[in-house]
Image 1 (cartoon, rainbow, N blue to C red):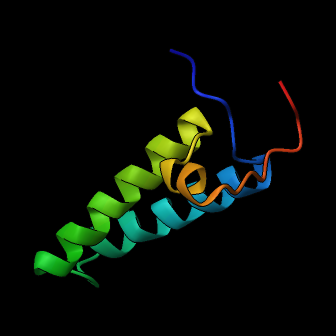
Image 2: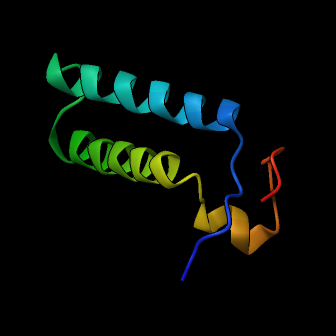
Length: 70
């Protein structure tokens, strides 16, 4: 099964930057506890979706930001 890309390069870059910022906030103990763990899980999800350029939530709502069509 091949996932159809539904995320643009710009969207991918934003997700990577947000994930990096969350990781830095967690590393420097600015966010911690259960909230920090939840944010780190969110960062992991953002990184995974940016790696595959496929967002399941976009699929559910019918959004497609990918300019390059396969």
